[in-house]
Structures are given as structure tokens and as C-alpha cells.
Image (cartoon, rainbow, N blue to C red):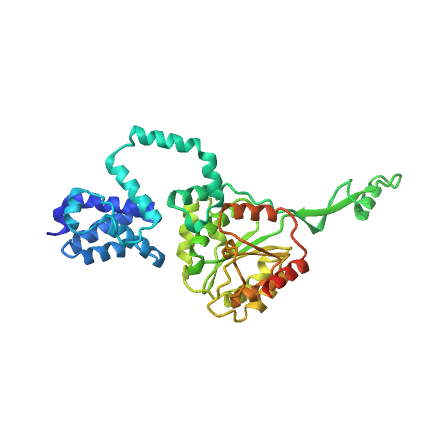
Length: 405
């Protein structure tokens, strides 16, 4: 028996399976569903293994999606009786003692699929939803402190909405240019003489001026290696929010190579922006060559984007595949090129964190601030800190040297 014999029943199951994957976080649209239906009809259902790899080839586009797909597949298309379950439109729950490690995202996606098959919510479920809404303040408080790595699918969506509303009040700093201001502390002799000439010299009105103030540029360098994967995806939403909130924001992603994604984050629609980013970034969730990527940034981009007292955010766990080769010198150059260098490290969420890695010890002497960034509360604290002046450079360097020893 082949897939065409199952007719619309199998097609309906494949569409529901695609909804489960989409709810669990995989980017699956109608086009992929149609491709999966066509591929299933061609391959048939004689072999479970062939059916598995057929759907895998259509729905999985990145390495980090494999485990999620595998868990969802074995949960949705449970043996024995793959075809019988497809014909019955059943969405089975795992039996007791099942050894498959089902992630929370897959479990919640399956729960949503079962609710869809069962129909609308019952009155009892409606009461539960109403009760949860009454306790929304507690929910928001827990969400603020919850690690991104431990969030379920609905919590991730709520966190992204919080991030979308964030604003970055970077303090304005004085520039070299001046503007007329009668309350200014310095006399403007050129403007005063021009005013005197216009009055014929009968009176000399004193003109004053003060320095113009402007928000400094913000440069973000974000690690997208495998160890940073779950955090860097949330940081992309943060980068998109601040890029559309202010001018002169420059964003770079690095793993084994450096990619400038500034132009793509300027799209107002977050989905379009992330789709553009996914197409140009080729080293997502791979290795990390921090020293080489910083060398490329310092050589090709530093003079373009770090002028006028820029603030640099360096987001990385400091774990380097090249064992810190050349990292210290490149970090020093980056540090000297900007007004303020802030290192955001998710590993700081652990109270027992110690700078034992060679890459971490190479980076620490050359940063002004060292902050954890692993939940909404840490992002909010970061935003507040960027709105006020940071520590003096030498004070920050000496503090981290003490921590490294």
C-alpha cells in the first residue's frame, strides 16, 4: 500500500505534523507542507525508515533542528501501525516508561495538536485559562527571571514580545561640534562679531555656545556558535528591536567567520529580517574562531563603525576553538578603538563561574564591564546600564584582572 491509497487522511496527518513542528519552533510554511505531501506519495509507506527520512529531508534545514524533528516524529507517528494511526488520525501520547527524551517544546506542541483534534476548549479548560489570567503578574515576574535555555515555546513567544517593546536610552555624549545657546558656558566670538557688524558697532551683543550632544554609535558583536545557539536566537530579537529604535546601530555575527547583518535588521518586520539573516549567515551553530573574526572586524570594519565614541557590546561565552590564539591582541585593539566595551556572557548566570578557559582569560583584561545575559531581567539591566555612564576604563580593567587571577 502506498501513500496515495491513504488519500486525504494521510495528507491531513502530514499537515497536522507540520503544525506540530511549527509550534515547536521549526520554520515551516505551506510550501514545505506541499513538498512533504508530494514526497510522501512518491516514496510510499512500505518502509518507516524511508518515510522518516523523506519528511526529514523536507522539514529539517539546520543541524540544530534534527533532535527536535526526531522527537516529534517518534511521538506523532508512533509504532506499531504507522499507517493504521495515519488512517485513524490519531495523535498518540508516549506510553509510560518511554525512553525517548521529549523536550518541553515538542510536548506542548503535541498538546496543542490534541486540543485541535478534540475541538474547542471545554468549560473547565476555560475556567483554567481565566484563573491563569488572574495570576498574570506572577507569571510575568517568573518570566523575567527564567533562563532562555529553559523556556518553553509559549514562554519564548512571550519573551520575544517583551524584547520587541524594549527601548535603549543610551546617554547622549558631547561631540566636537558646537551649537548656539545663550545659556552656554563659552562665548562664541565669531557669532558675536557678526552680530556687532549687523548693528554697526553701536552695540556688541555677546553670543554664547555649547557643545552638541549626540547618542554614540552602538556596535554589537554576537557569537552564534553551537554553545551560544539558544541565546543568540533571542539576542537577534533584541538586536532587531534596538536597530529599529535608534540610528547608528551596527550588528555583526561571528562563528567561524564574520557576517555584517546591519542592513537586514533594519526591516521593520521581524520575520522578514530573520529570514534575510538566515540566508546570509553560513556558519550558524558551528565552531568558534573568535580571534580570527575579531581580526577581520578590526581590519575591515573598525574604522568605519567605531568612530565618534562608539559603545561596543561583545556577546560570547568566550569558548574558542583556536584556544585563544591572537585573541588577547585583537581584544586590546577593539578595546582601544571604542568608548566602552561591554562583555555579555551567559556563563555568568552560574554562581560558581570561574574564568578557567584560555579564551575567557584572554578577553577579560580588555573589557570595561562584564555582565550576565541569559534572561529578560539581565537584558533590562543591560538597557538601564547603557543609559548611564560606565566605570572608568582603568577601574574596569583592574577589576577583571583581579577576577582572572
